[in-house]
Amino acid sequence: MAHSELIQVAAILLLLGVTINCQAPSSSGSPGPVGPPGSTRYCGREKYNPLTHLCCNRQVIVKPSSSFTGCCGRVAYSPSVQICCSGVLQSKKTGLTCCGTRLYDYRKQICCNRIVMAKRWPSARCCGSISYDSSKYSCCGNVLNPKKLGHYCCGTTPYDPKVQLCCGGRVHSKTSSFQACCGRTIYDTNRQICCYGKLISIFAPYGTRLRCCGLRPITTYNPTNQLCCNRRVITKPSPSASRCCGSVGYNPGTQLCCNQRVITKPSPSATRCCGSVAYNPGTQVCCGSNLYSKPCSNLAVSCCGMTPYFYASHQMCCSRQVTYKPPGVRFPRCCGKVSYDPSKQLCCNQRLYPKSYECCRDRPVRHKGCCVVSNVKGSRPPPGCPVIIEAPDDRDLKGPE
Image 1 (cartoon, rainbow, N blue to C red):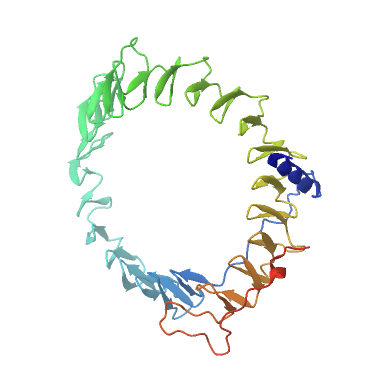
Image 2: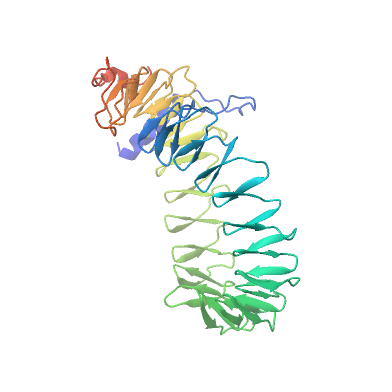
């Protein structure tokens, strides 16, 4: 029997072994699995308890109290009574905020480039390191200009987009509505086309909208009857062809591009490829290059390697192998190729241990509280800790019966 046939037989046996319920799920069903929040985190390579410590600039520091939840450089602080201004702690005061390392009153002052100055106008804004009245002036590239209605910035110069164009920081006068920018140059779109910053003359009837194709050399094409495929201009095989499949054009409404080959859709619902075959994802699932029929359209079927499985049932996928969820376990996890109950077991280096153990960063598994901090010189396990827990026997690695 061929290898592909063996895979299909195994998949069918797995599907038959599952109790199938094709009824739509109730809207009041239980929420998806959400694992319990972890009690420890890592700061670089060092493990710490976020309830009692903070990680500030990759350094673990002790919280003076529970209100100290923020870091200012490598110092812990309480955001309710302090504020961190560019690495400098300041006492928090109503109406004051940071300007560099200082505090200022944003109601009476303005901060421009870390410089505090008096707010002289209600509409005061910054232009570089100076403040200005935004109701009378505009700031273009840190240069002040008298404000004009409907004008915008082009580099350091204001311009009127109704009668001017801004091309690469240069202002040009508009003489027609068919003008556009190509880099810093203005051009007539009816006579030229801009391809990657270069102007190319159009040798076509006036008003023809051409497009760019290729880089070396740069060519143009008419999208009405041509396509650009693999940087080459080709003639459309039909007026409805709008996409490329390799160097061939095709109609995405009636055709698919599968493995660089154009194939006709057997039905409008066949919208995906499985190898070189079109299929309907509502009634079939593709695993690898093999197609499998779904028992019902609303069934949640996915792939585990080359095999289909029902992830909403009692099956789960561990290391590309279909296994079964432990009975009565709401949030099972994978440990290598087996499933386990994380509330009763621990997975370290793809092996299962009792929950009373913990994984250490230096890879040996020890009793809880017995991990050695490997980056601290001279550190030793607390008294009474075994050196290394032996690996479990093969019975610990078996899945649920």
